[in-house]
Image 1: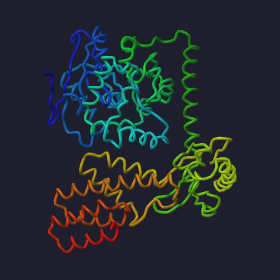
Image 2 (image 1 turned 90 degrees about the horizontal axis):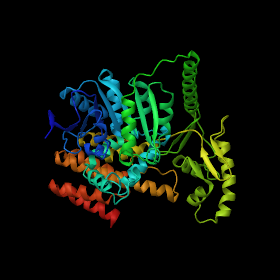
Image 3 (image 1 turned 90 degrees about the vertical axis):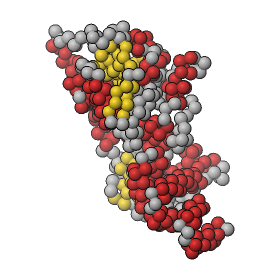
Length: 514
């Protein structure tokens, strides 16, 4: 079996095609797959190239330490593969997370790469990061399972297609703790800056019917970068090489065999092409700059309710006309409708009356948020916060999710301790008691309790009993849903044979829980 070994890492690889007389392509698969992901296009590519595929660390037949994974680690794995196989200057073809590996490798080892093809990369507006992470988090049931319909979102194949069934089998064999780490790495590594940094001639491919990873930012960036090209595979989704193998392989082959772009005989034509690219870049950068320079609203909720606009605190009139309740709703739903606000804040009122009242409340809130450039944008149906929104509660929720997904014990403890110390001694997120907000708070507390118990059990295994006891005692006052924390604290005293403390905490639990 073709395996290369470095320390505790074993990389499985496979070669196809004539390796002596042809240029080499290295194919890099995405998250939740392995080297077999490219089976449909390998025979087509190997007619013209020497093709190397391999299993990323933690997938398929490749093994190694999968705690605290980083993009750089996977880049070095790729470098080890290329060096060990003594491959000459190569072409890189990567999809999804594999495209991130290819981009980073091409920047660090530019002299080793001829050309590069990247497919189905993930890019979105920065302010949507929390929303997208939350969406993926829900799809995976809090990082505990792969969504059943994941493949339906990424390929157009029917469920009874043998290739669909084969991909399902590969996907569900992928180790979940590795998948979740790579999901976070994929979402948190913005590829458009990498596209600007690489100097390797590159092609970006997108599926015409892509829905899971919108390609607008990637395509727009590729259009104005002189070393990039962009093309769309018709009638294909994320996994274009599965939906349209012949077209995908054909476009890859044509680009990799393309000769250097001929110089323009007509100076005017050359100048027009150059100026057009510059114009597109300027439009893009201007829009980005305007976005960066827009108003900033900071809403603190974790400990106390405070509002700052462009650094200046707005102190008064928050308890009038539901200003505080509406603003908090908008912080979590920056673009919403009048009807959604009414249903969430005043579900007991007839919708007509609620909408009439809301008109007055929004007028009051708009005056509170008064700036030269309006922060609250309202039309007949929609309500939007048109500002850079910073909220300590949203940032805290995101850090909790990262701590829950962390599988390295040391890193998990560090993230938990940082979160635990950030919480007040009793009561958090108490700025409003609307039902929608209380549901979010209850869910957050449930995750924090689970995290507290998980970390405490890890510390018990290390015989760090004093620290565990301190954490559990503090947690009882921090969390309302603390019955399981009482139970663990009582079990700890029993294990330590501390009869006095055992009886004390039994009585304390009875006082609170009966």
